[in-house]
Image (cartoon, rainbow, N blue to C red):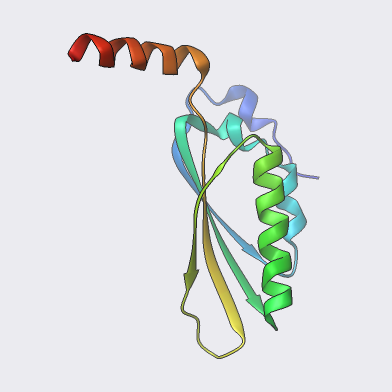
Length: 115
């Protein structure tokens, strides 16, 4: 269980959060309310690291991706990192907090005025 009590007192949200997830304990990712940590259009970058085969690496990516999507974060990109030694897998998984409907409406109105 992850203690998220600090979120109640946090006056500001982050533009970017970088989190490291290894194969030993990836379950913690699901316990974080990622959207509450992020400001509007904030970015979460997960760095995953895994020894083993491609099946293990895919499983780790799936755990992280599922947790982020359940938190309401669409995936922006996935970047495979070169890792040494061989049979070590690392990825950058990028997720973006969607704009709130009010914010997107305000931006659309501002864009139309600027045209």
